[in-house]
Image (tube, rainbow, N blue to C red; front, side):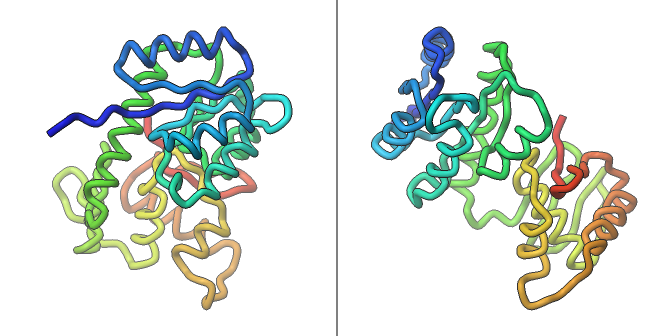
Length: 230
């Protein structure tokens, strides 16, 4: 069986950054495309359908946030991984990036080994998701979630959670490091036909933390929650 060569699109308005990232990615065997602005990057993404896009946030014209949002509107790019690359490390810019549909966030100056490691890890997740669409299990370093049996396995022990706590944990764990807004959580876990109070999510998260003795479910103030991996 012929090995799949992963396509990576790098979008940055700094020529030195494009050359630097392109060189290091090609060394690892990736097929690399480059663009110097958001509009050109979007066109290339639609044409080449890359497996992963590395997007600079701060670009003139169409910035990275807008470009990512446009990428996410394309049905055939729904599985494409997006990594934001920026010199800005403020929480609000990270939140904006994740809300636009980003999968990860890397700050400049970029260390090639760190970036390559993240790229490979995210592409492995894409491969797993594409080959195991019906998978009933989410495996994390801390615990394993069996969605078919509705149990969480930690340290060899099975932990049974109430249905809503289980669904909330499964949602957060399905995309580690992604910030899920309160609206997203309400919609996915409770649905639009149930009216619940603002504190409902907070209470469920607190109970999950206690029962699983985990500190990896992080609160993003004013936005929502995420399951953070080390």
